[in-house]
Length: 246
Figure (cartoon, rainbow, N blue to C red):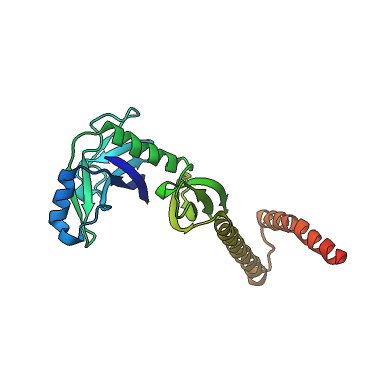
C-alpha cells in the first residue's frame, strides 16, 4: 500500500487527527469492499487514521479506530516508525460509513504517512500534498497560504487557516486553480479582503471607545493605527505621483 495524500486534518483538545487516502490496496480488501458496495464500489475509498499528540509532539495510532474520539485508546510511535505502527485501514462506503480491516504491519507505509503529517505540522505542506509558497497571517490568528504541487489539472491552490495559540494550523477551506496567475490573484484578493475586514473592525472599536466613554484608544491601539497609516502612505504617494504625471 502507498500513501496517496493527507485529505484532512482535525484539531482536538491536545491532539490532531489525520485522514490519509491510500492507493495500491491489496486485492483481498478490494474484494471485501466490493461485497459491501456492489456496483457502487469506489476504488478511491480506502484510507487510514493516525494522530499526533501536540503536547508530547509524538505521532500515534489508534488501537480501536471505531472509537477514535476516545483519546486514551492509542499507541505511540517512536521516531523510527516501528513495524507495530498502523495495523488497520478503512473503506468508506457509498453512504459515508467506514468499515475497518485488519492489515499486516507496514513500516514503509508508516513512514510515508507520519512524514507527511510532520510536514503539515511544520507548516511546509497543506492537506492534499500542496507545498506552501507564500503565507500571510493576521493578528486574529487567521491566515492564508498559496501552495503548489505536481498535478496536471490543479497545480496551484490557496488555503485559509486558523492558527492555535500553540502555533498549529487548522485549515478551514481551499480553492484549486489550473494556472498560477489565477491562484495568485485569488490569494491577493483574500489578503485584501481580510485586511479590509481587520481595518473596519479596528475603526469601529476606536469609534465606539470615543463615543462610549470619551476616552482615546489605548497606546497600543494608537501605535497600531500609526503603523497602518505609515504602511499606506507610500501607496498614496505613488498614486499622487502617477496622477501628477498624467
